[in-house]
Length: 164
Image (cartoon, rainbow, N blue to C red):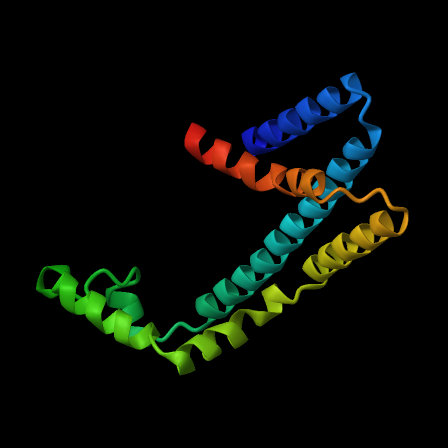
């Protein structure tokens, strides 16, 4: 994770130095506001989904459905299912049927909507919209450079993934 932030800061510093050397202060302002908005949205998404996953993991941990004899005989649930007898294709087809469909899609959306509408993420999008409106009001909005600023975080993620 530390390497990701190193790549992120490095790419942002390259942009800052480039615009300062060329004395393009309005473009620098556009990229940096977009960069901050992108960081806020990404961090908000991460925190929202992290909270959801921790909550689901806690629920899963508490829903222990082994009876007392099974807990004593097989405390780690090693003998409950023989893996040699499972056909991978059948297992895949069953999972595909279980997850597929409009109704399941709506159900999955409702289960994960708490992370999708987390206050941190909503704040990031509000900051993005307000900053665009502010720049447009001052007549200094540059869509190309704003998009460049927004793309620093995803590009850093791609570089980080390829580097690993």
